[in-house]
Length: 322
Image (cartoon, rainbow, N blue to C red; front, side, top):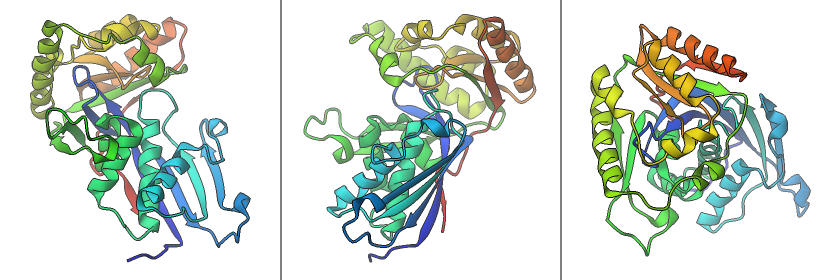
């Protein structure tokens, strides 16, 4: 059934991806959010300039485009293109809570937000599975958009070994929830500089050795069990990686100093959140504040300002209010 809703507000959590050895396949939603309000506008009767209004508030609002190049609006349009329809006139209000280009899934929040907003305004023409497929196609990989949509910690894999004939939303995905022990606390250290995902991918090798592939396979398996049980000894070993972090850490000034400080303060280990430069430490509830303080202090000694926060894993994912 097709009908328009006058207004809907979508809230989408930030995410942290990779978690060390889980490159491009695992991610977790965090208790940090972007909020998007979509309001249907009257028909513009051919006046194209009135078909879209975007207002942005919050930190870094001045850096967000308010025309048709806005990624949130592009996702909104993609939804209607998928249905073979013309996007309706819309007013979009964005409240920023997730920092840009810091490895916390800001692009995933707007992709999921744009698709969900469009789906709700259309009367939910697509299922959650279809929305997820579109989100993965737009983002290029599932590790951020899947937990942003569904919440929790999620592992995603394609259903068949090779799908050369399938691309984007046409690929078939299996997604499973990864149990996350409540005693395992994610601490994010967000520096005052940026690192683009494209730049972070350019430093990666095009091929890896069999040994490195086996190393990451073993450590990803251990990571899944460590997150479920909260066993510190497993997590200390599991957070190691050979596919991306050895190459990317050189792009993040002070990485080794912050890592050493976090571990000395009681963290099980530290990894690069997504493509960086945010650094993610996993610790327990007893040491979380000490770890946060140590990471901030270590970066300050390197001449880098940062915001360090102890967060929780968001279990709801994207939510909406009419």
